[in-house]
Amino acid sequence: MSSARVAGVPCAAYIRSRGLRGPVAEGSAIDSLKLGQHISQEFDEELDDIRNRVMTMGGVVEKQLDDGLRALVHGDSELGQQVIAGDYRVNSLEVEVDEECTRLIARRQPTASDLRIVVTIIKTITDLERIGDEAEKLGRFAIEIADEGGQPDHSMLVGIQHLGDHVRRMLHDTLDVFARLDAENALRVAGEESKIDQEYDGVVRQLITHMMEDPRSTRAVLSVLWCARALERVGDHARNICEYVVYMVEGKDIRHTSLEQASKDLRSHASGGDGT
Image (cartoon, rainbow, N blue to C red; front, side, top):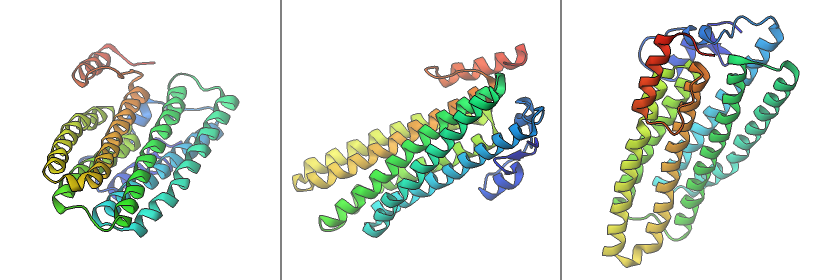
């Protein structure tokens, strides 16, 4: 696979299409993983096809999340139904990519950085599928709330809208660092998860206060609380994907490690020589 390509499209073109700002260091991370140096051209093409499917799945999940949030905030039960129906596409893509990865391992027996890529992709599609599940929950609750006779008070949805926008930005940036194979920015994006947690806690406090002041709103508040929880979980899954990117590029497992320590470890790792 050419070092100037990511997921079947040129890196620069893909990143510009997503509206990402900043310089495009084409091929630098790809070259470090030696994706363009395989003896078998077929192996390169298979890896390229798999990465392309992952990015397709990421785009579908991103749209599902966007539609689910809009359905909830605007009380659009029809859009909520579309989100529910669209979840099959996410599930189908996960199965397709997982099967391709299994066949690739069996046929090519990849090692070192190539194996890291395949392992990372398997983990990534699992988290993308779970993000799709959370988006489906938003669609279901949008229908439930609409069927119960209208929208919750606007004050109940302001916090959800803000939290949802933050989560959408994090997912968008997560897919970008995956496309770039950008370990440094993956750590930065992963740091948004703690901010989302804080924002989620604020939304929960606001909703509980609303329920205490108006006990008649208890049912609606509980539904919105579940939606807030779904959005918070999307942030958790996005952070997981960022951690996988670091592992894929640097060969360093930073799970269960603070981001500050992970950043120090990566700097030390870089100064000490190449990874596996």
